[in-house]
Image 1 (cartoon, rainbow, N blue to C red):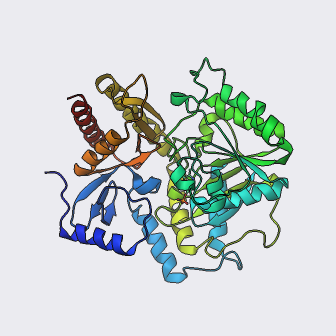
Image 2: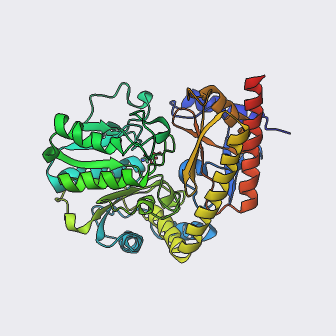
Length: 441
Ligand SMILES: Cc1ncc(COP(=O)(O)O)c(C=O)c1O
C-alpha cells in the first residue's frame, strides 16, 4: 500500500496555505511529527525513510542522538541565551576551540550566527574588512543563501534573484559543470578552459584583481545540481586567488560535516581556503551558522559585525555534543561516507545501463546527484519526469529533494545502515524504471 493523505494531513496543509507565506515547499505532503534514526514519521503515523536528511541537516541521524538531545535539555535547564556577542560565556568558546581541531593549522577565529546565509554574509563582510577591497567573485549555479548579500552571490535559479536587484558588487564566473560544459569541451581534454577564462576575461576586462576581496566557492555545488568539479579546477581557483591577492572562501554549508566524505569537502581536493562557512548539519537539528577565518587575517573592528543569537547556548550545546561524537568517530564516519557513497554510486551507474532517462550520476562521499534527461544526446533536462520519479518515491515512503534543473539529490544520513540504504535505492530504481518505461510507452 502506497502513501495516501488522510484528513489530518489535508487539514494541516490547508491551514499552512491559509496562514503561511509561500516558501519552497514542493508537492510532497509530508507533515512531520516525529523522527528517529533513519525515519521521519508524519502526523498520521506514516513512516518515511529520509534520503534528504531534512535539507542536509541530519547527517548523523534524524532527530540526532540521545547524547545531543540530553546535552540540549541540560543546557536549556541552566540557561538558553547569554547574549554571547555582547557578554561572555564559556560554552561557545569551548566549542570554537574544539572545532578548530577539525580545521587545517592556522585557523582560529570563529563567528557564530544562525544559518548558512548568515555565515556567508559574515564571510562577505570579513573578506572586505580583511582585504579592504570590495568586489566578490562567485560561480554560476552557486547557492550561498537568500539574504541580500549572499543572494548577490547565489546564481542558481532566476526565481531566487528576480525582484531583488540591484545586487552587491559581484562578478559571476562559470563553474566546472563538466556534464554541461559552458565551453562545449570535454574533461580532461578541455585543458581546464574554465580556469583560464576567469584570468582572461572577468579578471582582465571586467574587474581589476586589485579590487577583488574574495572568490566564494562550494567545493561541491549543492542546490545548483550536485556538481562535483575536477580536482584541477579547485586547485586552479585556489591559484587564481593566491596569485591575485584575494581570499578563497569555501562554502561548506551543505558539503561539510562529512557529507562529501571528509569533515571539510575541500580536503578532498588538497586545497585550503582562507575562510570557511558551515551551518546545516553543524547544529544537529538546531540552528547555527559558523564562519571560520585564518588567524593570520587578523580581527574585525569593534561593532563592524555582530548579531543577537550568535553563540546561542542551546544551539552550541547541540553542536558541541555532535562535535564530540564526530571527533570520537572520525575514521568510521569517513569510511562510512566513502563506502556507502561508493555503493550508491555503483547502483546508480548500473541503472544507467537500463534506464536512458539517467543522463549523469555524480558524487563525492555521500553527496550524490542523479541528473535526468529526455535524451542522452541532446541532454534536454527531464524536469517533469524527475518530479514524477520523486513523487513515486514519496508515495513509497522515501523522502528526496531535487537540485538544479532536473537532478535528484541523494543524501541519506551517513549513519544509515546499509540495509536501509539498499531499501531506499531499490525504491529509487523502481521509480526510475517505472517512469522510464511510461515515457517510452
Ligand atoms: C551551500 C549552501 N550555502 C548556503 C546555504 C544557505 O543556508 P541557510 O538556508 O541555512 O541560510 C545553503 C542552503 O541550502 C547551501 O546549500
